[in-house]
Image (tube, rainbow, N blue to C red; front, side, top):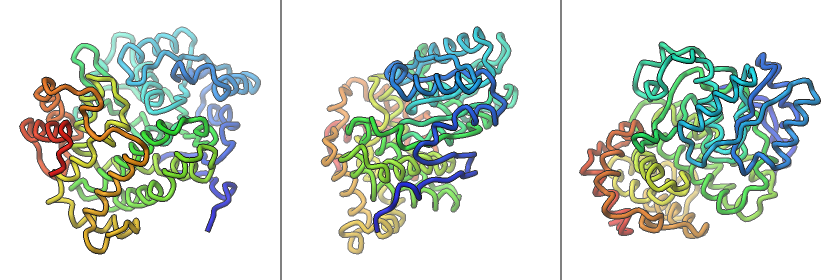
Length: 396
């Protein structure tokens, strides 16, 4: 049964307030006022800054009595300099809140700007807020934030964490503070219509990776399991349609929901897909979703002994061909078929990863906070083996 886009609208309150549906961007000024924001900083990337979706939002806010300062110096893999330049811009303009507007990079940068702009000028160090540490308890609550996703992938709009590259160490660092969960999310699928097919595919694979790793995490959280499972069903049913026809509002809506569900689910944890992807992205500046897609099958194969039964359940629920005979194999084949259909790279060599970097990447992966939730415990030697296989295309 085909869905009417008009039915895919609603106001949700899990895990935060989400105003979902086509045309919801018209409520941006109201969202700011609801959170007590009178003069926001809109953080986005240079590519979006000049597009009508941003210029229109700025003009609409101005007309509605919510003057908004634009900050667009955000890299595809945001670095701390982007964050502190944004903090300086917010303070100079007297901003009392942030609109994080864009893909995962802009959402992460905007949320982190909101966090650091609330701190004293000589206060807490950004890197002391890395996930797993308790220093966030000494930090002040972030400025209120409205999140406006324009891709369906990271789900950062429903998360309490961000990822920022530490230029000094070359590490992607997960920054966490419970107050970084945006107060209101405006999830408008019309803002994702202009995404080109390859970015739609890569961000969609990121949403899949989040749901998949959360579901496979060994920690007990049946609430997250249910959200992850349904998120994977939405990816199965709608990602290919969104890639094939970017104007398909039903597909765009369902993928936007899947992305938010992925980030909600991974409160349970992630795993080796992200532990490998983070250092690759830090060193080679690769697209995060694409990198996840490339390493995904190799990690699945390595984890098979621990996730075989779980993925059999997933394959059956998704109705994958061959699920009744070999659920794990059916799921693995599906991920490979998606990469083939979308014309994605099959090895990290195709991403430019060099064999000489294996030791460096493996050591970084082993200490990445996401590694601790992998179903199979991996040390640096275990990750090096995974990098070797992902480089050679060895799924044996």
